Length: 192
Ligand code: B4P
Image 1 (cartoon, helix red, strand yellow):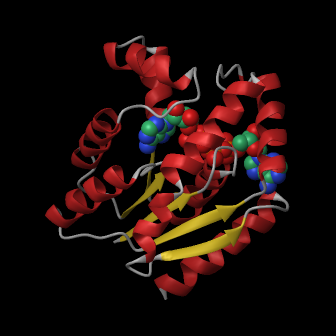
Image 2 (spheres, rainbow, N blue to C red):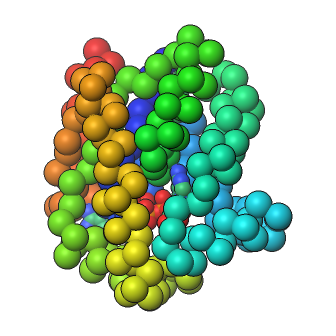
């Protein structure tokens, strides 16, 4: 079973590339951003609480997202692999994920980390904000806050996986298909 973490700052293309990877490899896609937006659109208690953090560009508390991923893993016992998109985003989430996988006698296969300059990230997110209707994309200050959250809380997640030699940096600039080919090359090298 192949378990991939697609990692990178907000706007680095995790969601964009995940869709293509899922179509090629058939894994189960677990995006905490998508799961949270679904809770918000259904106006659940969890969604309403999460929205107050997301609208400010802040990370949602660890226990909320860890609970969501635990349920998602339990609901998919027959998956041939998982693509974790936007999770883990803190070292505590990474440790929780390792524990969940260990209980299933599984482990993370690799973390592919997309590298994109801050200037390009802001440009992409502002552009998406013009059409997506996402409240966290249409405000320059919120976008900057998301990048600061990434630098102060999330960047350390790659250090966590580096101690196990599981991190591969991938250039995240260029066309969507160029980046996709780079990711597939890294995956195929590990599948074969
Ligand atoms: P996410 O939904 O994970 O979103 P993201 O990091 O902003 O975007 P992503 O990297 O997926 O970018 P995309 O492909 O869409 O998180 C949203 C919020 O949810 C967080 O801020 C946080 O509050 C909360 N959250 C989620 N997970 C959490 C967790 N584990 N713990 C706590 N809180 C959590 O690409 C962005 C744009 O760039 C798109 O418009 C796309 O078309 C464009 N693009 C992509 N590739 C491109 C390329 N090669 N060239 C040009 N444009 C490109």
